[in-house]
Amino acid sequence: MSISTRGYTQTLSKQIKIKTNDKDAGSVILTMKAEILEILSVTPAFVNLGKVDAGSIKNSGMTVLNKGKAPVSISRVTAKPESIISVLPDQAFILKPGEKKQLDITFNSGFSKGHTGGYVTLETDIENLPKKIIRVRAQVVEKKEP
Image 1 (cartoon, rainbow, N blue to C red):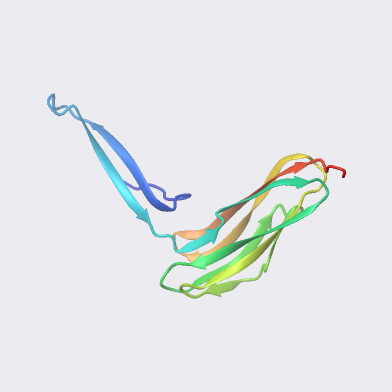
Image 2: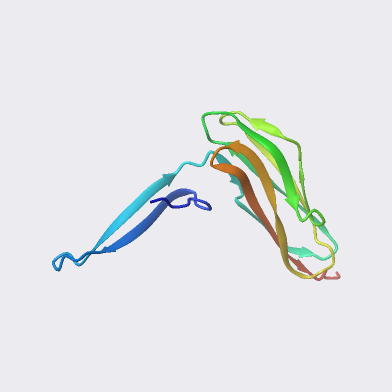
């Protein structure tokens, strides 16, 4: 049996209920606990820019950290949709074990009000994590006049 750890950090606990044909046992509950060993950590894991005035630009940042024991290659950094989100630096880079890198996110709200967002994708050489996706979200509101 396998369980996806996508979206989980630190620990994961799942229970499996098995019904038996043993009248005395009835059902058995098995508990699986796992410690998630995150090789490539991104903080924040989800970029929530909150309320952003229509027609304005808001900047934020995120830190990428190699928690593994081997270098991690980030072959590509992209932001979608490109019309509202950009990320710098957007070139490939390598993180040595324990090394971190700051990425700067720019959000261009445009003039359409409401909840909007996109994502930043880091393409990696990690076998079980070819892409690390970080969601970016904001609520575009009408600019209040002073």
